[in-house]
Length: 181
Image (tube, rainbow, N blue to C red):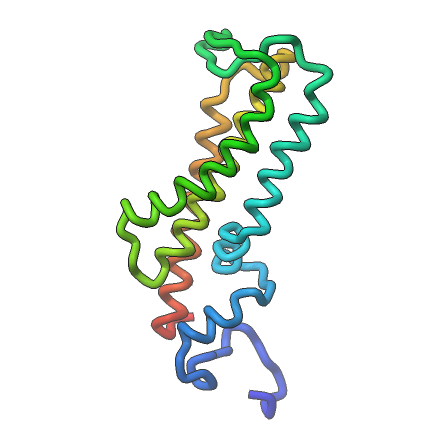
């Protein structure tokens, strides 16, 4: 490979140089690359979960003093249908902790994802749910101040983007494992 005058990603065939491709990818998943497979590993990381949870807490702390005594937690047709004390703004990071440490193992077990990608899919879904929690927290604050009125489009876009990236990433991982990329 090094003897060639030009090296391109398209011509790179890792299988020629590595006997166990799956082990190679697993051992080198921390190498930063800007592709959808790497996105799966980055998005499914503990660092991403920590960042999302910290953002939930920081947003809560920064907005707390500006919030009214009651904030909306349920909406319908642009109207708040359920209000709670503004201290509940701090429930969002707690929900992320619950998702990570209680719900994650349930997801893995109930979906019976005991295949090679089961762990990364579970991590991805866990962080995705925490991202939804962060989105809801931000929406609640923006709704309180009259900036937005409908959460459906926000959640729909979140879902489409992250499911799309998951499918593309898993497809690329399969192709790499089979020598297709």
